[in-house]
Length: 452
Image 1 (cartoon, rainbow, N blue to C red):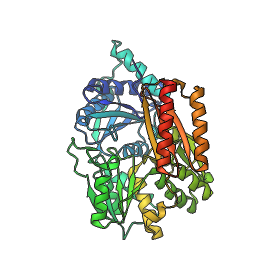
Image 2 (cartoon, one colour):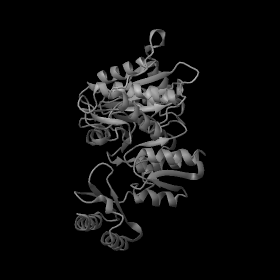
Image 3 (tube, rainbow, N blue to C red):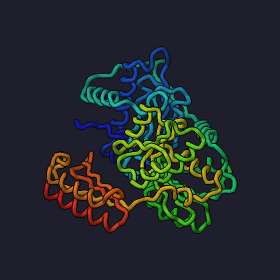
Image 4 (tube, rainbow, N blue to C red):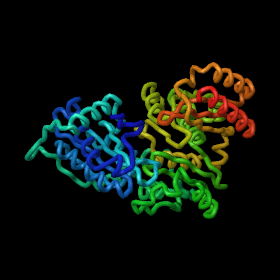
């Protein structure tokens, strides 16, 4: 069996790859593994279970709840809430485990199961591996040890979760948003109620789009992966800014008053300066990935802020932040982690903090985001090559050296192998888009000839 857990839980096409049986079995296995690890020692265990609005989330939620309760875990079912809300409630309520059913920005037919440990933190890799092992043992016939009578878990609908999470968001804001007009694109997803409520309570005038989930329309032509509707709505309504989330609202991208995109790197730059001004940017450091735009790195150096770069993936950003005690990190895609207030990327919190900076300074989002110049970035995926040789090919190394010499200090080359497909990603940044395209095209040709 291949590893079920990816970088963000278990995902697949619902009712094909991710079945009710799999969701139930993983939940029972998780309960047993955490019990063996001592997580439940001395008390009756509790779990928080939430989901995004996908139709498949309804039966998968039922399977997860059944699995946990059958293993003796009391379940607080919080319904449709963002992934960061489930993480927050897991910590806030002192639960032993959190479970979120979502496939984030993926299309509607997909779904996923993501587990949180006590405190709302991601499960350690070794625990995920153990859950897989235990699940497989019992899937093939080894019987479970099951509680009976009063030992079975009880299931409660925890309706206070919505207000508790919104109150948390408002409580950590540095200032109100009075006087701002904001358009919110909720991707017909998990934040369709939470985000408008939070922005309105914070004082903003709110216009919503993509806030009518029907179980089938999540991420469909809207949200952080499709900014066209948000751009148009911001201009049409004369708003100060627009905020876009993905299906489970752990991401945030923005557009300024002119409808121009403000990506995750620019958001990080704005928040880094705001947090340093407030004395909250520990060690004057922000964490990004190797895919962070070179313009972001140049801007942070100019402002006296250190940039620590990790492998691609918000899990690696979070690992670095926790290990070194950094307060802010994120990705170009809009995963932004403010570790003092969240244990994972929180799109609603990020949007609120970005809007709060606009309100506090009286400056436009375009002006604030202008702290960095986003250099043109070209990405070419080269398929059907031996990706394992990307770091050992002398022909490729020579080509990269020549490209770097041509680009100089205002350009960058990054070659990396895909973690899931037989391809190599060629990324080139340059001050001029045509130069970036030309260099990337030449390097892609070398990758094909050297590794094909």
